[in-house]
Image (cartoon, rainbow, N blue to C red; front, side, top):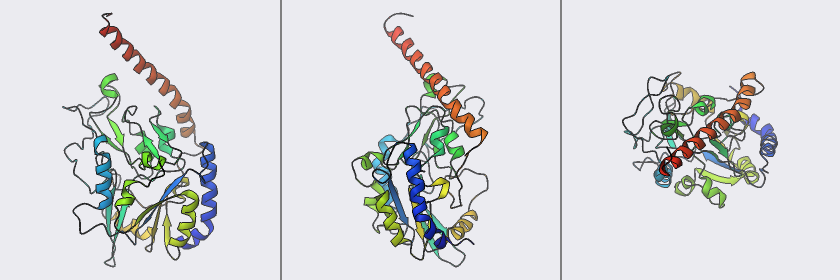
Length: 325
């Protein structure tokens, strides 16, 4: 079993340098703008005294006005034979859904211990979902929030396909595809945590942080987070600082993440997208491959075609209203 403590000693500074180089590629200085969340699994109790964990409630309360309201009856689009619909499960909190952007995973260990782990988007420094989206629906703020624009997303789920944790969740019956190509393209809109981007822009911590009764979730600018992690991670294990090339979500635990992952796998079906992310080691995806190159080249072409379709549709609508048919 790899020793995460020895990894930490050699990676804190190299992780900072990696984050810096990524951010410079995005024209941002992480020492000044990038924020990081640290989630302490030893402090999280899962809010067992509440019907809903405090962080989950806070997230839902803040974002409920942004949740999807699908147009029904839902219809599959070619060549798909089905669709993803969570509209009848809006109150479900045991996994990620388009209506639940964070949840607390209960992990039962073989020795009888229980670990509670808040899960949501990891907000990768160099997010593959952002690069692969053919319509440019995913952006990254200066503070490091990876966000999906529901006004642009077609719900093709390419972002989920390349996400190592399969974070984004799809809801059918909403989005632009209904107006443009409802029978041949799309599938809905993808939804996930947006790091409370609006609050980070104001220098405020996200909703989940303020709500946590045990201070199990904390947010800091990157340069302060590195110093905080050195203190929190002493004699403990870290996850997220190097996964997928570096993320803005760091977990700290006295239980090795290999052990947590093994326990998780006992409750998951292999190959099934279940809205419950793993704690597996993750190397950067799609780097230096022909697939990555083709996607990078194709994305702007698809975006131009998409913009043309939208503009053409708006022009037709304007002509119709003006009496020109």
